[in-house]
Every structure is written in structure tokens, then in C-alpha cells.
Length: 29
Image 1 (cartoon, helix red, strand yellow):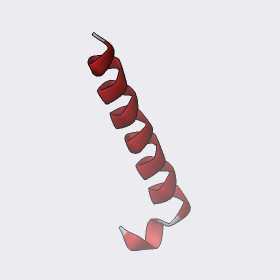
Image 2 (cartoon, helix red, strand yellow):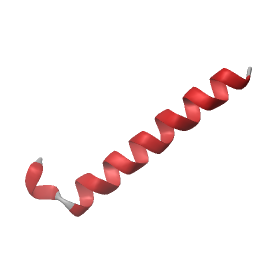
Image 3 (cartoon, helix red, strand yellow):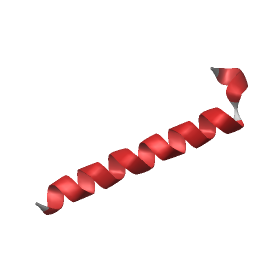
């Protein structure tokens, strides 16, 4: 299922980017 890989990869990248942003800018949380 290619769609599963695309959705999973997008969700993983989004989570990693969000966590990285939260670590860089902790004053927003």
C-alpha cells in the first residue's frame, strides 16, 4: 500500500518537525 507509506511518512515528518520546533522555541509551549 503506497498510500500508507506516504501518509505514515508525512505524519512522521510532521511530528519530527513539530518536536524540533518545540525544542527550539520552548517559550511558545
